[in-house]
Image (tube, rainbow, N blue to C red):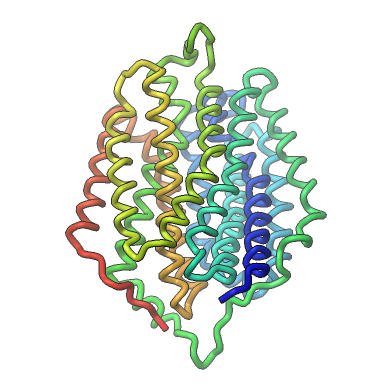
Amino acid sequence: MKGEGRMQTDRQTIIGMALLTAICMAGDSMLYIVLPVHWKEAGLSSLIQVGVLLSVNRFVRLPLNPLIGFFFKKVTFRNAMYIAVIFSGITTLGYGVVKDFELWILLRSIWGFCWSIFKIGAYLLILQLAADSNRGQLMGLYNGLYRLGSLFGMLLGGLFADLFGMSAISMILGFSVFIILPFLHLFLPEALHTNTPKQTGPTIYENVKLLKEPELIRIFLTAFLVMMLLDGMLTASLSHLIEIQYSDQVNIHGLAIGAAALAGIMQAIRWGIAPFVVSKVGSALDRTDEKHKILLSFLGVAAILLAVIPLHLPIAVWLPFLLLHLLTSSSLITVMDTLMSQYCSKSSGKVFFMTSYTIVIDLGAAVGPISGYSLEKAIGMANVFWLASGIMLLIIFMWKFFKPTELSYAN
């Protein structure tokens, strides 16, 4: 058992890592609100290009993630974070000056590299610091706090992009990244203990064999679909969805608000509330051995809300449903992260399994935006959401039909 003082120090380390990630991802989050509406200002020629740019950073992470696991074995944890922060600042500044689609692809690819370092680094940090009694809480704390960057980026972009343009917002967010560099050594450990002794560590072949375990496949499949349908598709299309439902200027009690601004406000409210919600979800996960029941509850809520969102409801009714849906998405991600970290906590191949999990969720998040915009052209946005609702029900059926067993651990 860890002492109370040690647990408090570990909590502060997770908070520091989360806030560092938040500042660096603000520019990326801004694009999800601004780019679907201001794509011409960015030098783009179609919404398909928007979908590609909001996906490419995730696609490049698929081949990068295995290399990032190796990267953490060769570079100290803190130095890896320095590298990621510097390149994050450069890419965010680039959003304000680049007008060429090919250069946009390059910037988004570099950001994908940075995000892989942040995400895998955070998972490994939590695995090292967490115990069974607080794993869900620390995962919820991290997931809630790092998304404050989404709050800041989306709110700033949604409110001020129409007034000052995307370039000015990108410059502000880009320079803010470099300000945090001198503070990294204050809260990040120099290195992580990710390696296992050679004589006890599983071989790559043994790890790959374990990827066939039914429990692991179920976790991976659920995480992939949740990330694709909720994080990838919904986040990337939110401002466009509002534009379709209520036009590019929404009238709320006589006040005209642009679609991008309203999407930014809703996401900001989401990420402002999320730290409290997902931390409570994480604590609830720590208190129960039947974590799948919490998962099923959130999947059921998500299925209902995905069916309701495309309906033409009064804006005052629709917005609370949207907010609940966004918070459900955040909670589901924390549930899946906790299930996976519980699996890895008993395994000697932590880096391998967390890297594999990161590849799966990145693939889902990458497929989401481009599939959402592509399917909209074929079947319409409403049918896309109803299809997603049906998929959520199938996931519930999978967890109910295949009764959960005690997780098989690779020791």
